[in-house]
Length: 93
Image (cartoon, rainbow, N blue to C red; front, side, top):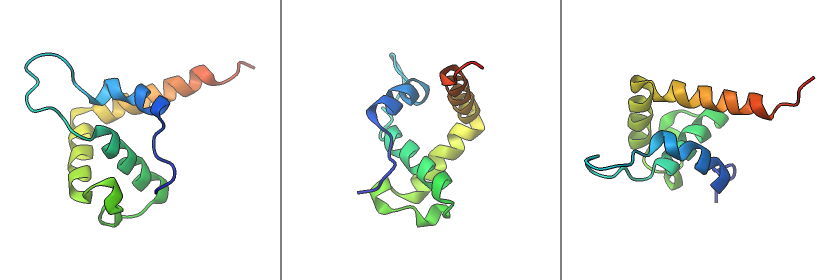
């Protein structure tokens, strides 16, 4: 078992950003939580994509989804939301 995977609370924060809802969305996306776990694992450990553990999915699939999110601007939106959330939790001085 890998350490440092998303908790249910963390996934609840990220889920609205990466999972589309509503009619006519095409094939349902699968495994976005696992993709986020994998992307954060690569970022945290600094390993190349190809060294992603198989428990976290196929490295190429994860990398392609990450590239789609980056190209579409979603990754920037997600990171800004994390920064805004962290700023809201910081105590005022």
